[in-house]
Length: 474
Image 1: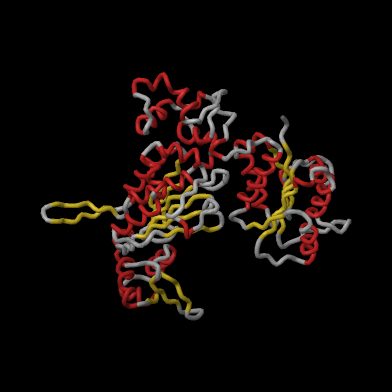
Image 2: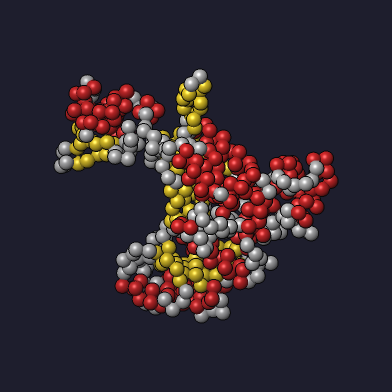
């Protein structure tokens, strides 16, 4: 089967980075790379033909048209049209016009020619986009196209079999481990003889051609990233409360149980444990209840939208909170108000395998358990946020920042403490306070401002004062 051609049309200057991102996204996504080739004019070598002749020929030969519309109409040719509008018109005359996917940039002030062009676009199906969600929207359009052509199976993600996979991709040790920790009645001594049958008939992750489905890939594959690059989880520890100064990070793409182990290790080395003496016993108390954190991680893995191929799960640790974000909003008809009252699964097969272990019990009682554990630790209520196609869980610890943990010099540490009561300071006062040069004082204050521990406020062109960032608790 020859590859299907995608033509990307837009004002080249206005959408230079987006055009390259679309091409790279499709070329770097395994299933898309096998099915599509992308044409963007700037990657075309000189052929002795006029630009108009080249791009219109490519439009006529393309199977899919992706158009981006922004504020600028572009250079007008002799026929009174820009290249983008001429490309659009040419594709609409073809028999493939239903494969036209146009995206209009949000919150723009288009020029007059663009406004006229947009009236023409309104006669077909189009969508809006911003710079964060463009690839997600294009991906959904391509998925719809592939389902319509019968190229992709119409089953849910976790039920689809990966035709490029084989039994050679199965890690039998991972299957044995799963059977040992699950409620399986298979005896340990029988496992070696029973793996294929177990995967095929009991776990329903292997078909008669020995292809794994996506659930099988997530639980038992030797190399998950080979088939599911979107399965990535990004763990980052930041100093302070902003996404500025990274202390530790780790990106992983592995099976479900390996991921849970990796996240627990990352959590343990990046959160604190305090000791309290009760009677004659010392008790170690974690900064957060890991049982609640693990529940949120399991939910993120089990319920994320794996059809979104360009966004990983993120596990972010700040000095005052942990944020866990997964692609895909709540599964309809579930709403934020119904969390903890109703259970709706996006990926039923994934949840069924988790149900065979202790993790499914956590999923079933997840939200109430999280709330209960945070209450036991005298921590704030868990926050749940649904925003622009992502679901976020936030655990706050109300911890005050210890300036000694910030690895600042002694002057910077002292001025942060001072600003809590003094409220503001200027450069001259800082120089006098520590008997230092203007260069040293400027460097200290600039570092604190860059780290967002203090705010820089201009009184006038010559006078500047510095105040403590109200988001920093000391």
